[in-house]
Length: 184
Image 1 (cartoon, rainbow, N blue to C red):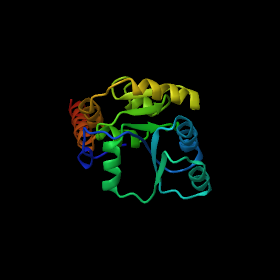
Image 2 (image 1 turned 90 degrees about the vertical axis):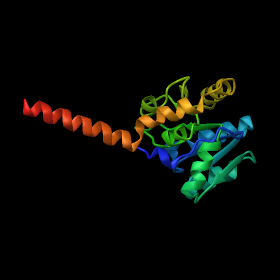
Image 3 (image 1 turned 30 degrees about the vertical axis):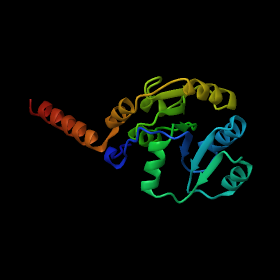
């Protein structure tokens, strides 16, 4: 799970929307986001290329503050990441590239405190965690987030740890080290 950091740009002028990107399938928890943002009234942009029964149901249920985008180009997606005030990552994933793509744009992440997010998000530095996949838990974290400020440069620098060039460098060092050990 490595990304090309140079594909993403940092824009320091953030807009006033939250963003989530992914397939619209049950475990991605778009239903939690729709229910939460229907209740709190804040602007949410949901990006998906999945137009299934769940998508149509959630889109119909969404209030005006929730904007659905489909068939988004890579350039438009990078712009959405860069301008979002925060990226939301509610699923339980083994890793998850989308939070890293957001962080590569200097955007903080609110993530469910399980599995892969624990490897990529640094609590209070690159984002925040919420403990339970419930409206109450997520909303409490959003309220905490609203009172905080995050440094886009720090966030982007953290994402660089997962850049493909860094991977190539680390794997090269590992192979060289193993080769030297074998030669002894």
